[in-house]
Image 1 (cartoon, rainbow, N blue to C red):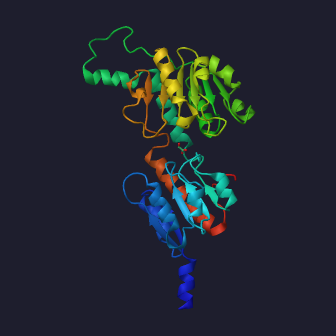
Image 2: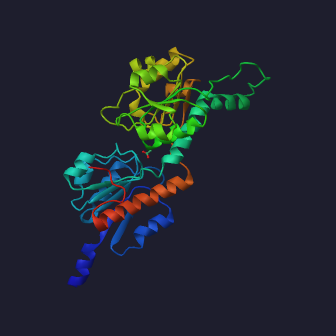
Image 3: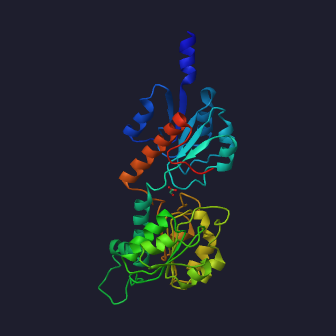
Length: 337
Ligand code: GLV
């Protein structure tokens, strides 16, 4: 009887906030020392349900979450047994990492795994915005396409254009590599300053520039920095107006890096300016958002890493991070706390 009680007490509960592939779930469910509470319904797990699941039965030891789940101090306090939070994302601004550190909770994430998928999407969005693909496709469907015409649907040339990358981390560097293939000189800026290894890798085609110089000189500005107090609202009216009047802004970091109302105003004032956004504030973007009425804005539903292969690998890594943290105390890919 005592042995059975001890075995039950040794079982650690893991809350999973979204349906995961069967093979990934099996990593958890095949373990006799792990019990799983999974959110099986469509869509994001509501915050109240997540709180209740974390608190239930003496408290969860691990949480596998996504960027839509707010992991704050109150949630962490719901379970005295909590040891690890593991997110299926490279960004972790939805997790209060200081609160995790204070409580001895480690944080796992999925850097590297989504670099190529996201860099591909960024280049696709840049090309789609520059060459007005959504507008052109709509014109075909609506019958607006009457005849071949010299400047109808004329867009902005990408080959050879100067591309400024704000946040030259893994994904920013991968975007730079791709766009060097288009003959684009790359300017970059970011919290880590000059990166001689990136400049060497891009064969001298990349140059470090302070943000204001980069904004003034770039035909395309690609935002890939992480969201932090320093980058929240970085792209306000003042900085947007420092860009060339016919520049294209691409944001695939977090919506909050751009002051969206300022962006809408600048897009209205400058019809030659354009924006391609994979991230917005809020998400999902309400269908009555003024952004969706502007011909010079292309909006995607935060699909940077969304290939089947990449999302499968992200989910698997998130679960392996939880298991490693519960077994050894440290996720395989751990956010430095
Ligand atoms: C996506 O935005 C991520 O952070 O993985």
